[in-house]
Length: 399
Image (cartoon, rainbow, N blue to C red):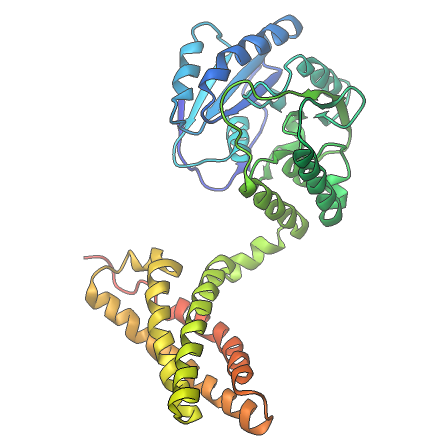
């Protein structure tokens, strides 16, 4: 058994194995809490492949450290099924990345994936393999071609599946439109078609990654009927649909988002923005009380309300937005130092904010609350970038 921990970028270095391994097909079975399904599935697969290409195949179980110890069940099966290999992942999770990790240790010239929940009929494996052997770079098991279908799906599930496919056609037509079932998780691909290709999948839909980034020319489709789960629980949740959308956008960008993220930390900025919105409510509440209820002047009310929001924002940014930096600078003296730098930077932003509010309000006669909103939007980028560079950078080595 191999125990795998996070190993950096998911770059598939699939060069030809050293010497003749005798393996034609490497089939990955990604698992998480599939202990009850694994043995009957392995039995069915070996029965099918044993008659077709034995012994020129291997099965690779990649388990995400399942609480039900699926990896242990798989390991016990290796005594009966010598073609079975087991990878136990720790600290990394997700179906798509599990498939890639399995392919990274694979020895075959043809790489495949099948779900471990008994919903993909193993007898289709032979048809997929024959399609690849006769020239296809990719062979996909499809529910939407002749011989395909779903067993007992509800109307809602059918609607969501078709809706996701339609959305994919709108966002990424040149990838999604190449196959009838882009949501399929059951396929085979030539090793050479994805060798040395950097993979960056999200969620469950590894097929999109293969088509979008691989050197895929000829595609064959084989019909199959999707079966209902026999044991265990479905892994499909609303989060999988969110990951699907993220994946489509990422493939659409063709690396542009990644290059932008290298120059500008978008994820961190979004967290900074969420914290900023919480400060916006604090700021507006205090400003309303001071300006409209107490009757203080515009400038005084703006300064006091903004400073209250600064304190609120520092607390949340220190605990969330820049938590990784903060963990390297523990203790109250370091926290106070960060707060003073944060305050000074934001006060500089506040000076710009106040200047803009007065210009918008007194010169352009814009409503006071709208003037504040416009000023905050302009100053937010300044506050984030300078704080990222100064307030939460580790400037002292650990003692």
